[in-house]
Length: 173
Image (tube, rainbow, N blue to C red):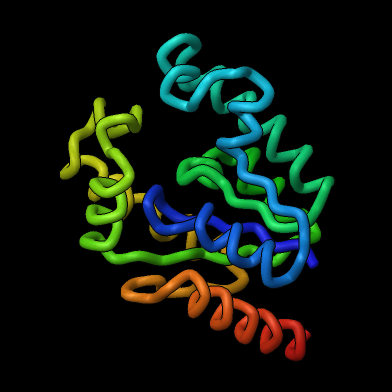
């Protein structure tokens, strides 16, 4: 089973991917972690040293590798916004799951996780980040096979709901 998690930063993609990977006993890849492993740099460090254009190229290369490898994949929030990445995910043999979170959930998670480390926060501030979330919403919805609302749910509950919805989608194919 191949599952790709998409959604805005702070929606819980990495946390849910880890829980899903443990429950299904399937390998899990995280695009941000893959960048760190390949470059030795965190995303903020890579952005600062090389800029967004080089990061997006590296991200696309890692996305191709992860989709070819299969398993559970958590993407960066901006990954599907790049036309090439959108197409790669859309054409891959993967169930694409959009983890949808309300603004206050995103804000809470980002503040809890250290928002000041995120390159987009430095550029946009919290209001700009929420505006960006709204701009990306339609793209996430268009790419998703399944949409899971994650507000006020534990990772385990999200995984159970995700598995239930995926089985419904597969039975309708």
